[in-house]
Amino acid sequence: MSEITKKEPAVLFSGRATSYLAKEIACNYGQELGQSTVFQYADGEFQPCYEQNIRGCDVFIIQSTFAPSDNLLELLMLVDAAKRASAKRIVAVIPYFGFARQDRKDKPRVPIAAKMIADLLQAAGVSRIITMDLHADQIQGFFDIPVDHLLASSIFIPYLREVENIDDLLFASPDVGGTKRASQYAKTLGTGFVMCYKQRTKPNEIGTMQLIGEVKDKNVILVDDIIDTGSTLCKAAELIMDSGARSVKAMITHPVLSGNAIEKIETSAISELLITDSIPLKRASKKIKVLSSADLFAEAIHRVENYESLANLYEIAVARKGIATKFH
Image (cartoon, rainbow, N blue to C red; front, top):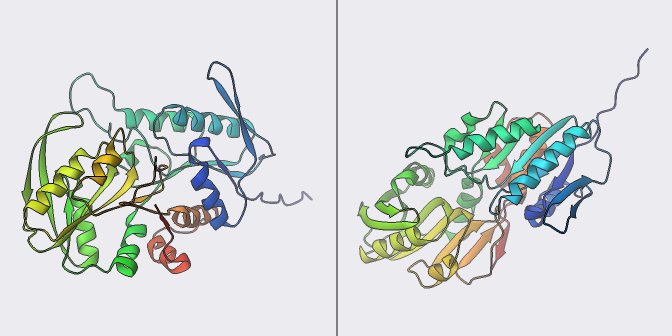
C-alpha cells in the first residue's frame, strides 16, 4: 500500500524591490519569509537562489514590477528557479503590475507591453497571479491562468469611514479613464462624483483640462490608480479649488512619483495624498500618508492556498485587522 503524500506548506519569498512589503505580508500571514539570496556580478548581472528546499511546495513570490526593468527580470528569474526546483505551484504576487499603461495599440507601430509581460510570466512558469488595481481591468484577459485582481478600495474605503468621516464628500476623477473608479467609490459611500476632461499634447504633458460637474462647497477626493509625475493630479486639484470646492484630497493606489512629483504635491492645492505601499515611497512628506496593503495580500494568499473564495475578501479583510497605516 502506498503512503499518503504529505502536503507541503506554502512558502513566501520576496524579490529585492518589495522586501519591505513582503515582510509585512508574511507576518500577517503567520510565518517568516523563505530564505533566498541574490548573487550580484560586477557587471550588474544577478542570479537569484533559493536557500531552502521548495520541492512540492506552493511558492508565492512577492515582487512589484516598477522601474527599473530589473525588478521584472528578477521576478521572472525567481519563477524560473522555482520551476526548476520542482515547486508544485508558483504564484506571482505583484502589488504593482508595471507596464500596465501599455494595454493597447493607441498609435501605429507600438507594442502592447502588458500582454507581452503576461506572456513572459506564463512562459516562465507562473500558475496564478495576485495583483491590485490594474491600470485596465481587461489586462486580466491577457492571461490564460487565474488572476486575482484585488481592489485598493478594500483599504481606502474603511479608512474613509473609520478615520476621515468627511462631510459634504464628493469624488472626482482626474481624467475620463478613471470615471468608473470614481463612480464606484461614490456609489459605495453614497456620494456624487465629478470628472476632469484633459487633452495631452504629448505623454506626461497636459494641454487643456475642463471640469465636468459641480463642486462648490464640497470636500473633494480625487481617485486614480497611478500617480506618476503628478502633473494631472495637481492641475485637477487647482481646477477644482478654483471652482469653489472647500478642500481637495487625493487617493492613489500606486505611488510611482517620478522626478519632482513629491515637490509638486507639496506645493499644490492638495491637502493630503493617500497612497498604498505597493511601491516604496521615495521620501517622506507631511502631505503623504501610506496605508498598508499587507493584510489584504496576506488574506488573499491564505485563501488561494486553501482554495477558498475571494468574493467577500473586502468584508473579511476589514473585520480581521481593521485599518493599518503608516504615517509619513
